[in-house]
Length: 488
Ligand SMILES: Cc1cc2nc3c(=O)[nH]c(=O)nc-3n(C[C@H](O)[C@H](O)[C@H](O)COP(=O)(O)OP(=O)(O)OC[C@H]3O[C@@H](n4cnc5c(N)ncnc54)[C@H](O)[C@@H]3O)c2cc1C
Ligand code: SF4
Image (cartoon, rainbow, N blue to C red; front, side, top):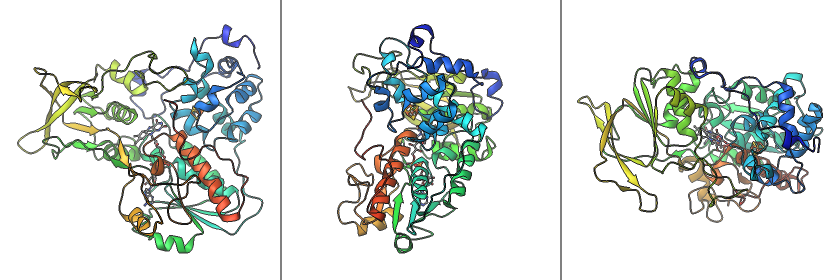
């Protein structure tokens, strides 16, 4: 423990966000730089607990007290070694993770938790800046070939681990660029895409091959893939979205979030579906909804309103969600801050009853009603019906699981047991293997809609299982079993 009094003498501090009126004019990340000496003070707050609950809070089992101590001692090079020991892509999690580690930090019981995520991102950014992140090609090749389907965080983590173990790995991606939701779901202002490109360069130099524009199941069949490769890792995500089948759903101007965000991310706002000059309503109060808000604001929306059917969450941890669980609290993400400053609304406990069209079939308004719930099944409150203007609606209500059909249907036919679990995700045994010999599944495709940190943890763990399947042994680490779940 570097500074035994650190947690008593320093308060939690994060870098400031750039002013709203400045940052909404560009697509760059929202945070200002954080001077090293201030970060060191944050690392010094770590108490190096005998039982570091943060390890358990982090699905990757990141060695948090170790790298906090190393940062405090100014040994950044060793800090990135320890961080990379458990996390292939700290530049993604350090920017995007909701930090369940901080919810489990022991200091958080009666004070503000250690700013773990900020320390994490500063370590990796410094490592890249210093040139310490270099390719780690394998010392020997096994001659075994592995296909990874999907290039999100799960597929990339699996691919990097397996390439480093000496296998010939090809990543297939149906989109025109690598990254999965990191590339075309999550906007530039949350994570600039150059971070993905930089990591791809390292992976390519290590020997991972990337093939974009290949929809497996359409452009190449599962049978062809099985013939060409010794093992397959399915990491195609959970991209089947939840819809809102209210009257008028077919109105022009109603889009799924994942129809709206990808074109905006491709051209950084120069989108085929632009919010410019429109009254925008975002249905869904989660991360995806926040991404739609920040995007619409940057595109120049006339107004933005966010609707959520659940009641407003509490600001502080309620007794029903005690430490060290991850509590569902009222969040003020950067996009929410922008919304508040620009006079937009976040409306809770409300349900959409109709998409109102104009004579040409274009969306003109939304009809809403307040609801009581969830215990009463979201019962409408009489007398609260109203309309709000809307020319663009984005539906950000979550995802139901992986897209069935195509590749998965073909594999399901070959499966020895049930290929899907009762929730429609790809079923795996305890070593991530599906019912088809040599076919493994990792990330949202097996777990259902989740988080980047879980996807990386699954990709790393599935890689260990594949390595053992191919060679009879493995030295690759296993972060979690497929059955691991968040502490709730
Ligand atoms: C808008 C949005 C914002 C989010 N924000 C956050 C956040 O801030 N923090 C966080 O932790 N999580 C966030 N998430 C969740 C997180 O992005 C996912 O949990 C994570 O990306 C899942 O990783 P994955 O590798 O399993 O799948 P994905 O990232 O979904 O990648 C799957 C890839 O597989 C490809 N694919 C699918 N089928 C095929 C096929 N047949 N052939 C070839 N390629 C195929 C897809 O095109 C896709 O690129 C967000 C999700 C969304 C939608
Ligand atoms: S990956 Fe997420 S949970 Fe793990 S240490 Fe980083 S911020 Fe915390």
